[in-house]
Image 1: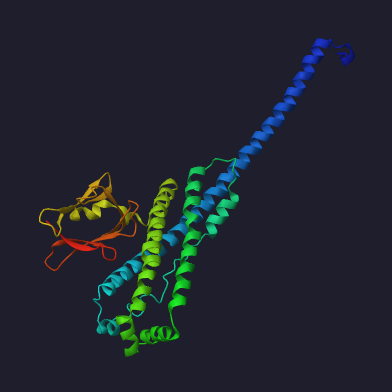
Image 2: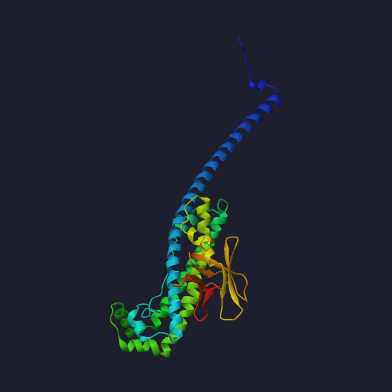
Length: 327
C-alpha cells in the first residue's frame, strides 16, 4: 500500500516552494487571461475603427464631390464678377443668361456631412495609438466644417441684408424668363449694387472659394491615404495624375516682350514659374484645371486649346487674370 504523508510532516522549505509555485501559477493564469482579454479588446477596437474609417472614406468622397461642384460654380461666378466689375456686361447679357441675375442672389453653400466622422471620434480613445495619425489628420480636416458653416451663415446674412423685395422678385421673374427693364438698369448702373458686389466678392471668392479649395486639397490627400491603406478605389486619382497635363508643360508668352510663364512637372507635382515667383505649386482638381497652393488659394489656372489647336493657359481671379499662348 502507498501511503502519503500529510502536509504537516512536509519539509517547511519544500512547502514554501510548493506554495510559491501555486501562487505563480495563479498569477500567470490571471496575467494570461488579462492578456487574452486585451488582445480580444484590441481586436474588437481595431475592427470597429477600421469599419468606421471605411464609412468616413465614403462620407469624405461625397464631401469632396460636393466641394468640386462648389469650386467650379464659384469660379464661374468669379468670371462673371470680373466682367461685371470691368463694365463689360450689357443689357442683353441679362436677358440671355440666368447667371447674371443670380450673381449675388444665391449663397453657394457647401454642406459638409460629418456623421461618420463623429462616430469614429466617439470610438477613439486617447490611450490607444491605432491609426492615431490618420485620426489626427481627420480631426484637423473636419475642424474646418465649423468655419465653412460660419462663413455660409455670414454670406446668407449678407445676401438677406442687401436684397430688397424688388430685387428678390426680379430674381424670381428672371428664372421664369421674365425680364424687368428697370431692374436691369439698376444692376448695370447702380453704384450701390456695385459696392454690394465688391463686398460679396470678398466673402464669396476671397474667403469661401479659398476655404473650399483648402478643404478639397487636404481632404483629397487624406482620402487618397485611406484608399491606399485599405486597398479601396481612389475615385479622384484621375485628377491627380500629372501625366494628363504633359501636353501643357512648357513656356507661355506674356504681355511683355521677354517675360514668360513656365509650367513644369517635378516629382509628380506641377509648378508655375513667373518672373517674380519661380515655384508656385499647382493643385490639380480636374484634367485641365488647377489652383495655386502657396498660401494664395483662390487663384486658379486652366488650360485649353483654341480652334487652331494652339495650347493656351488662363489665370483667373478678379482683376488678376490673363490668357497666355504656349510657345
